[in-house]
Length: 254
Image (cartoon, rainbow, N blue to C red; front, side, top):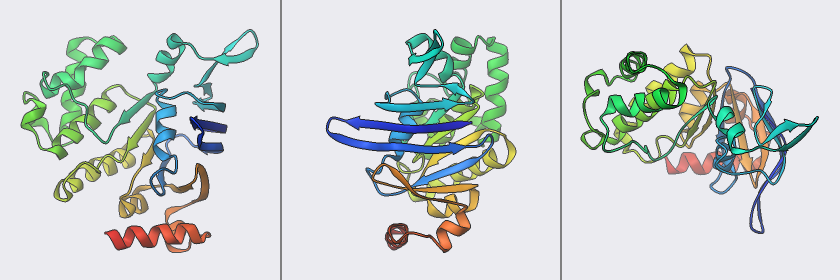
């Protein structure tokens, strides 16, 4: 479902991703872990086309993302092409990015109506289902400012799912939350992982969550995949000393 082929990303003189290669299978839940600055969030931003690659190619569902076919070869994608590809991908950010002037229900229905062309009736029916799934059915008429951080993040997850994405990107979705609010968000993500066939790429510092939910965990360092393994292998018997150092440091912080 996702393929990075020799992807390079630079910010000025700083090379963040160095000929990065990896794939994610359809329906797979893959967690990305590693120190700050290792390139994890940059991967998600490239997939959302918020950044452009400096080398290599990215594919989603066999369709080029950063490039488009023209005249028998790949050229840099134009905005129209990017809009079409982006419909296949949803993202939940660290910050909730809800529209404060809209009620919860409208936050969820706005994009499906405008972008997917759903009727208001169909979009609202879908939104109600999703609010029930994330445990917030009674908050449909509330404004975001009336919700806790954990509730706002669950609305943001529902909003992403309302677009029926094939790929869902999660960027440290619990990092802005108070510890007591984290459990509710992780519960929702566990349900999505186990009850849908959405392909999920998750940047997280919640090691126990990554261990419980992931099909694979990739350890990043200096813009490259240092280790890629099932969670039980990576967390109990990692191959690299750098991975062991990182996991010890995370456990000490917790």
